[in-house]
Length: 145
Image 1: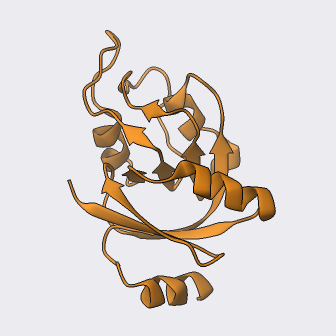
Image 2: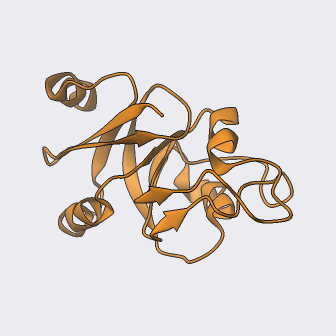
């Protein structure tokens, strides 16, 4: 697995592990506190071009299928822990491969509480999520551009 970096506009830099597509994206962070329906949450039209922060401790164990949602509106997925092995009988692929297919970045092994706390202070918090840029200054410049 590759490393990934998240730079928040409050100056916080987080390092995690990528489980989705490669690249860089600038997005406003939105929070999902639901216990189920990760794939459906990603299809929400209100999430267009946003990074979705899942507060559920582990994501991915139900996998993904084409019946629950065929599109992804979120530009990135941020989770504390990602499980590549899925156990749902309806799943056709892992959530990570589903994100790759749709060009969506996924980052796990990050401090989701730190991001949530930053969101409490700034509800329209923007971030740069990248698997290709690891320099804080370069990430900051990308966010400001």
